Length: 148
Image (cartoon, rainbow, N blue to C red):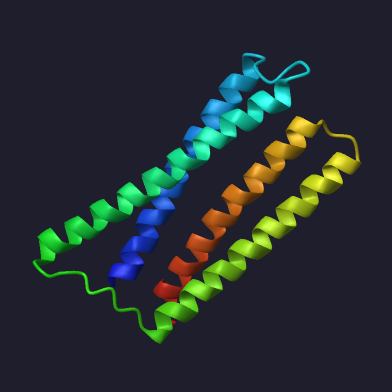
């Protein structure tokens, strides 16, 4: 298994953990009524704005720990070489991510047009980004496993 494939697995697991945390925090705050009232959307936006850097930080931390573990266990430095196959697989993953996010965004807009609350539409848009990240990483892993 290549370092890039291991990194993809780590990104997938990290994304699942961060998405679970996001979902738990948002659902808990929603149940508490934190997003109700005239300032509800602003409170929701502030919540998301601090959660995004936390998610990015966790992803960077996991990547660094993975690189360190790779170096310690195999006693060789990660040289960062990426071949053409890796580039094609990463590009495929980005395409899957973009399609998933775009589809989810349009679905959230359609739901808003049919009468869902703005908060639900924003949560659907946020979910489309999360689904896009998961779908892109899963597509990359699938391509690695298929031997492309």
